[in-house]
Amino acid sequence: MIFGQAEGVSQDDYNDSVKAVKDFVKALNARVSVDQQVTMADLWIAASLATPYLVLLDSGFQKGMANCTALFSKIYAMPEFMSVFGQVKMCQKPMNPASKLIKVEKPKPAAK
Image (cartoon, rainbow, N blue to C red; front, top):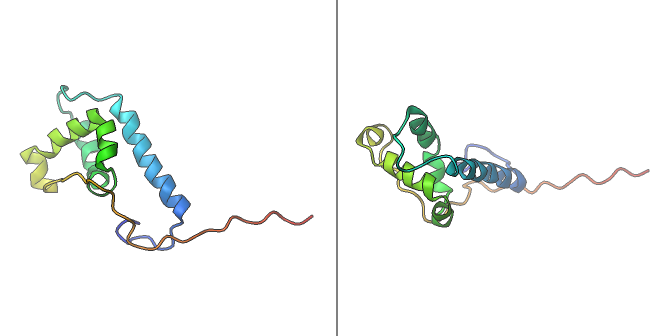
C-alpha cells in the first residue's frame, strides 16, 4: 500500500495496519534490551521491521521505543546486516501512502 502495491485501500484499513505495526513494536520494546547479545530472532525481527523504520515509524515514535530503536540501530549498523539490506536510515517523518486511499462509507441501517 505504501509503495502503490494495493489499490483501493480504505483509510480505516491503512490506519488499522499502522496501528498494528506500532502495537507490535510497543510490545517488543518491553521485552528487548540493548545490552543483550543479538540473536537470530533479533535479526529476523529487525529485518521484518526495516521497511517500517524506513518509512513509517517516525523519530517521535522511535524516541518512545528506546529499547527497540537502540537494538535495531545496533543491528542495522552491523556489516553483515548491511551487506544484505544496505543502509537502513530510520525516518524522521513518515511517508504518506503513494496511492489515494478510498473512502468507504459505512452501510446504512436497514429500513424496517
